[in-house]
Length: 281
Length: 166
Image (cartoon, each protein chain N blue to C red):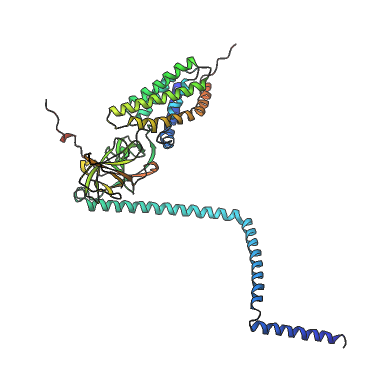
């Protein structure tokens, strides 16, 4: 009895304490304490869980890497397919723009046909800006055909062999392209340079040219189809004592990183030589 | 045999030149692998086919490049000429001769290129061409000279083995 009494007392005290704690908790007096306890427990559990997952990751990493690589390859293939699809769609958009802008050209050839090519090399001479593409006369490529990317004008075919062709970039020092400025409705001549910079020449002094003006091929001379995007004017030099204004053009295509190009195969450059009068003997 | 070997080696060099080396620019200049190979080959003591190599290299580059056909041909023949001249005189210091040939050969080829292109109507500014293209190209060719010389020296030793004295 003597021995059981204190135990009963202990039980009663513990029960009272428990009830007191419950009452205090229900009354909201233990919120801060319970929050502290909860945070401590959650923090500890988070630490344990993180470490456990790290160990599991470490043990299962080879299998995951293999599956991730496989998944990555699948996704890369998917990206490549979508990019190809995107380029095809851009070609169609470009084709539509060209056809809608040039009625005469559209009547002559209702659809432009393109031949995709890979740039496989550059001219060995650093003085010249030519690239070599991997399609030639076997694929229907002929001298003078314009070469573009989905962004804009690249140049034109200069020489052709059976399976390769050499393309003169419009940034070549000897290149001259007739262009028009979309905003100012005027025409000019775009010339390249040894540094690859493009500049506009033969702009009349009466015309107002501003930085930001879009430069398109004009089609004059018959060397290129009209309305192919070339670049944007970034600066203008206008001096009163000169006959023409000059402007610097930021090309739309990065000629140093050309990888794929499109040759417009249904465009026939106009041969002007017979029209040029020769001195009669 | 040594002349026949020129075809695969120079074709391979031309492929590397157009696909890789022409894309590696310093300012606007680039190295000329074929020129350096021809210089190194012509400087080898026992080599007798260097003129043939120059012809093969010149024809190959003339076929690929828009340069007038005689420019690479004449340029490479001049490089070999300078190399053979130096090879007889400063043979004790082959690397010095290699640098000299690369330097003078690049200058000669570029001067020939500039003036022939100008005569044919390309508006190349001489000063800018020299500063922005020729001088960087000289530097790149000099950098390329050391490893190419080592490789070509081994090749020459393989194709022209030294005579064994009895």
